[in-house]
Length: 313
Image 1 (spheres, rainbow, N blue to C red):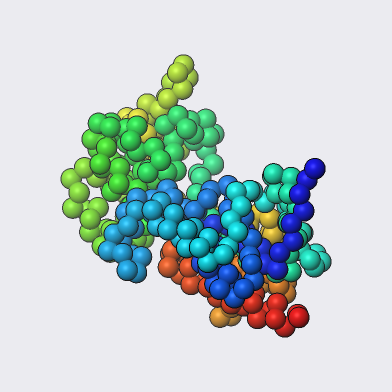
Image 2 (cartoon, rainbow, N blue to C red):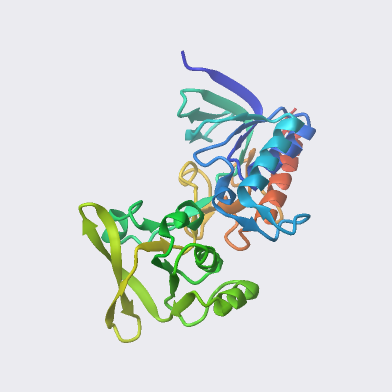
């Protein structure tokens, strides 16, 4: 028989925003339930060195998230390994349904579902996903020892992926539509000094080529955005690093959103367009997208949820 669980505060998502919300909500004696979602720990579980988390000169992303989960649990957050597949915000108590069959009801909810990697939308990109095309260098970089690979993109994500991949690859070609990067200056400096990385400016990926039996990447075709000229490059791996999109599918038709699906919150607040619903982290932040700002918003969301619930009582 399916379970039914009720809680004052339901937290959906388990990145820095979700776990921090759990810490603060627990300290406020709200006895929150936190449903981890499809990627427990969020995007930081697929990174390696994190150098901008206050208090840690360098920390491994997965280790940091293990510590955050343990902290939330120690404070009293009940952490549940489930995936919310449906969320009804039309009336209170709000109702969420999990893949496990459990139905969760709550008086307030913190949405911390984060973001996920964007793709280019090419047929051949889709064809070779998992067989030479990837969006996660830390997941798949190991498989390309001594190989030539390419990274698509020009922001922080692309540069971080390219730098990380030099640990394995013999050569990394960074392909970007422009001739300047959109990343932190310290990352740009590291990239330009790395002899294994070669930027290819003013180009975009138009096709991934490879074998069918077995399925595998052998190269790519890129187009010069100024001249239209097509060039073929040999490579064994293609890493797409063009940013992330908010994971707002649960609420896209219920809450006010903008900028391609980011949840709108009130100024200086995590409150959304529905009272009792709060959003934190990359789900709402299209500007900073940092672990530390996500954690800060998780704190804000829990404190605002506490005030909302106290006002209801």
